[in-house]
Length: 310
Ligand SMILES: Cc1cc2nc3c(=O)[nH]c(=O)nc-3n(C[C@H](O)[C@H](O)[C@H](O)COP(=O)(O)OP(=O)(O)OC[C@H]3O[C@@H](n4cnc5c(N)ncnc54)[C@H](O)[C@@H]3O)c2cc1C
Image (cartoon, rainbow, N blue to C red; front, side, top):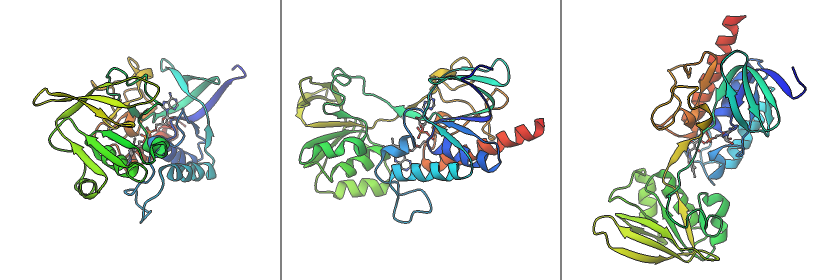
């Protein structure tokens, strides 16, 4: 084994709710798990200012704070959290090989909890204006839009939660949605509709982000009438969904047509000793609590798998 090659019983890819919950369980089973954080310590949950639906926090908890608590608890029981990114896996023989930025891991079992990333609109100017008015994270960037006009695109829970958060800073928040109806929960919809700073444009899509030093104008199109218009705004926040971070496993693990890793009710993939948990394997629920639950289940199953081998 070379110097930068490490052998571990349980390797966990991802430090979101699924990965850190898996780490807690594997650590308490005395398996000395190693968690590779990827680029986003705490996962997507760390990107949101408040999580109000994770039990145990009656008045909510900051997303980043919850991630830190998950991490501390896992580390308290012996998990090692490494700032590292996996980029290649080889499942042809055990222990499985995972190549990372810092070296190579040989893992007896692997828990994939690489989560998901924001989907882009895919319109002209979006990439060029990211960081100059276009954002996918209200907690990170909301503050820059103090007393400014902001547009939020999306119709689900995330779009509503984040739009409401931005009202703390912005002078107005216009939520643009391509449909007539929203997917967001009733409580969030009511809060947003009652908010004096919130406006809504329905049946409309953004077709272009005009480029310049900073964002000033979006081009919009009404999907019912095909009427086009220009809309002045200082900020554009996009919350239209996520796609799983599973590119690395294509052709190596069974997936559905959207790239979510297929698991059975024990979080097992089609490769023995390889588990997937959280949004990498969950196109349905996509919550902190469900992801954490899947992570715990994957670690319990990995523990049983290793015990059966001994
Ligand atoms: C803006 C926003 C607000 C939200 N609000 C709520 C809410 O109020 N309540 C709620 O329950 N849920 C909320 N969610 C959803 C919740 O955050 C997710 O369901 C949850 O974080 C998914 O957990 P996960 O561990 O599966 O993946 P993620 O949180 O996506 O974490 C994935 C992890 O994998 C790592 N990673 C990725 N690729 C690699 C790699 N190649 N190697 C190593 N590591 C890698 C990343 O760095 C990250 O640490 C929100 C999401 C967003 C985006």
